[in-house]
Image 1 (cartoon, rainbow, N blue to C red):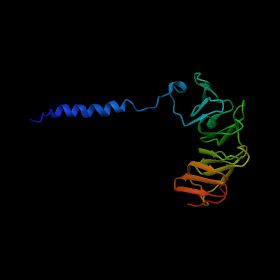
Image 2: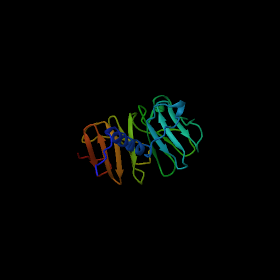
Image 3: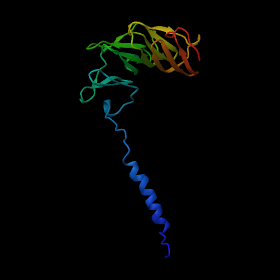
Image 4: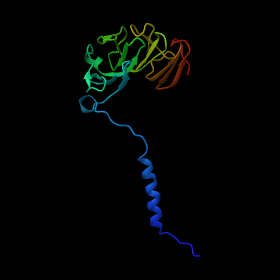
Length: 193
């Protein structure tokens, strides 16, 4: 019996259809209509009540139980409105890192208040199970040992390196910097590359 051959264009069509069918079954992200119909968002956080908060150059906004976006910027003035990072604490307090005004705190049900510390450009926030928190900034690390009420400037190996992200586990802090990753085993007192 002779072998029946299919024209090559039929084979190409079948090969092209299989990946297209597969691509339709892959999950994808769905954009949310953000504040003002879509604005630059630098930070996102979920509260213990399940509300979604976003930090933008124009302040903090919340989608409370599926509601439209509502402003949540009471107490944020000037540079403090440009929120770049969030950290939620176990008692419901929210910490916000701002781009130029340092760290802000919002106790449960309250307004945003400035923390006691140097004004800085905060790029990241991280905390451990206790009250020790760290903020990565454009010029090093800030540390708080009282759940974000007061902050102290730390250097990394004697240098004020820009910190892009942080990870904390107990007293161990990892900092992603413009000069690589640094690690501290003593809550940011000393660092090693």
